Image 1 (cartoon, one colour):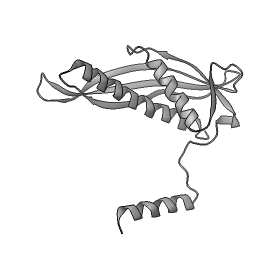
Image 2: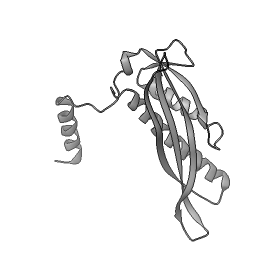
Image 3: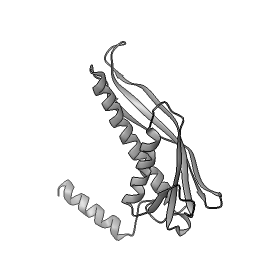
Length: 167
């Protein structure tokens, strides 16, 4: 039997036993929509707050959740801030030549109800991605932007699953 057959059998067994991955359920309290509040940016990466907000909006949309930016009538409100974006060395060719760098984004997110009661908070969500450093600075900058995009997508997915984790 090859790996594809085992993969199919594994999927059938997992689905047959009623197992489901955490998250992916309803919004807390059975809310029908969520307001996306301001994402503050305390990092040096200009414009990243819009990328994070759009990433979270995309996750909500993919999973069929209704949302609006700044909707004061929504039963839930999600806001947060980008605490930091740090870049460190990943790999070196020599002591003076860097081949790769790591970019790490750290967020703080909070979910409140309409009355302002805190329902969920994570003050230290972070993710890291490595990117190549090349001789062309424009290409290196593009590699960094792609790495930031991957980090934001993973963080947005994590935020969504935490919101729908039936906590």
